[in-house]
Length: 250
Image 1 (cartoon, rainbow, N blue to C red):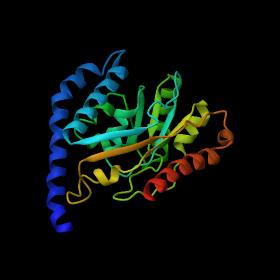
Image 2: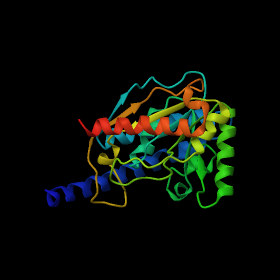
Image 3: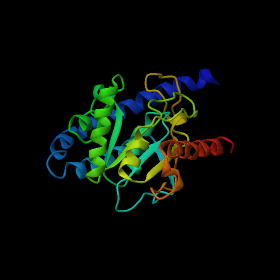
Image 4: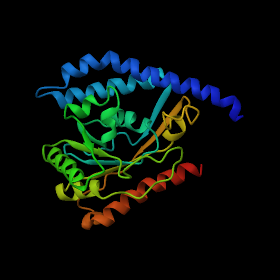
């Protein structure tokens, strides 16, 4: 079966990458023109949503979101999601309804097209090799929250390729939420790793299908979990992990 499926996976992943590049190139002039000035954050969100939607349609991926309206209203928040697929980033653009800064590893600065959002100050690159630079990135995120922007982050600090195992969470996201007393919104990407895993592994997981996403109830600053960082981190981790395990047992 693997010998039969691998060529199809190869063709699909090449097709996916071509669609990503062509659609990005077509939108790139609009990105450069619109993500500047006082409306750049709002315009960037709209461009991300249009781009993400277009790619999903063209690569035959439908998006099924549970509790899509579960985001807090009128306040910034910190989104924490599991990360096992490059599709996670694309769909994060699509499902978040409010302006947000995405914290991504500094390697994204090498990615074509998508790096413009980091270079223009819409999103925030995280330089993990230096404690000082990580702190500087978190300080920028802290300022964004104070300015009313939400933050989206993968608290595992990296991607677990080709499986749904959840790694330990790093503290940054939870420190930001506690310091600013804003809600945490856990998100579980249930099966993205099956639909599109590592773009460098052309014979790895990749196929059209339904991307299933669960938006969990926000953890309010008034909850018991906000009493200390460890409790907040473990509550978020348990929430996402439980959804992954329940989906895996279906």
